[in-house]
Amino acid sequence: MKILVIGSGAREDAICKSLMKNVDNVVFCAPGNDGMKFSKIKTIAIDENDFEHLAKFTQTNNIDFTIVGPEEPLVNGIVDFFKSKKLKIFGPNKKAAQVEGSKTFTKKIMAAAEIPTARYCEFNELTKALDFLKDQEFPIVIKADGLAAGKGVYIAENLADAKVVVSDLLEGHKFNTQKIVIEEFLEGEEFSLMAFVDHKRFYPMPLAQDYKKILDGDKGPNTGGMGAVCPVMNISKELEQTAIETVLKPFVSELYQQGIKYTGIIYAGLIKTKKGIKVIEFNARFGDPETEVVLPRLESDLSEIIFSILNHKKLESIKWQQKGLNLGVFAVSKGYPTKPVFGSLGDRDSFKKCPLAINYAAVKREQEQLFSHGGRLYLMQAQAKSVEEAQKKVYRELQKMDQANIFYRRDIGKNSI
Ligand code: AMP
Ligand code: GLY
Image (cartoon, rainbow, N blue to C red):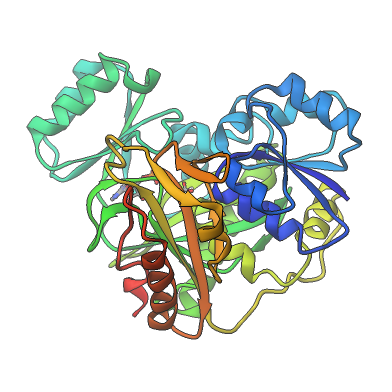
């Protein structure tokens, strides 16, 4: 099959490489990145929000179907646009993508389906929000309602900080915010559960864990993800089943009952609290960097899975590797996430020599040199029997890369040791 993947990060690199395990597939990525050019992925210079040109490309090249990586085109209605042109595309339509595009929309679905999540209130007026804060306990969580590229969540430690955040959002309209959610702070271990969704049917993937903070020991500001592991060793099979039964199942079924026909990936960001599993967020797409470590463990053919779902054909089973684990570490630019500093990453040979799998993100190629041109550069990963063994493999190879301009966490996987 001929397949187009939309997006430009390490997640899209992982999706493309999973599709290419079936050697009959020809895989295009728009816009992709320069690191993908080391593989057989065909990068196409069309922006992920340029629906008109993306659709034209699929028509002139007889693409069988398109897969959408990032949330922005989904929330902007790329699926509706493609469908209006009778083109096959995997992802939720604009209405269904509100699962990620609107925190309040999703909180209401969760309430209707009795899915455990943080208690919350929504506000669009500054004075009411400030008034509400006066009687609250801290820390408290404040979230911009719309898309904010993962940056719209604040954990305020005290009333003074909370007031500043609320004013920035509702008065300063940071992230174009018109509405905010103020919610209870939850404590516990976070993990991610993704599933392929075909209207009322869903097929869970193995659990993964994303290391979101910039520094070792989960310190410092949040990032787009500094590394990931799959599966999650310290979340038991029973707990995984509970998450499927008490979160995924009622969520998918509530969407369907409300007339929202969801096709694509649902991502549940979960937290294991003292009072049981609760939902932190839902996303309408493959998680990043979870996908990079989850998809290499898929033994079934990803293109067949998606093709069947697009034709609403029931899948008998999806096979996943059962042994060992995958652990991936992101190399990021020094100064990330506030002020990434760009520079050379060395020549192509140093990447080609690396015996481990690499998923590329914000890298640019000039002649035979690779350069950074964003925060997260590439994810290097290993498969191994234990976290320690996987860490040893990845950190040894990252050290060999000897790149002056990069930074990475040294403790990815620590929660599973
Ligand atoms: P989100 O974009 O909603 O996933 O939030 C980003 C990160 O903020 C999460 O992964 C959590 O680490 C943190 N977070 C969000 N909501 C809460 C909450 N209610 N309690 C504690 N931490 C939270
Ligand atoms: N790993 C978090 C996300 O994909 O939003």
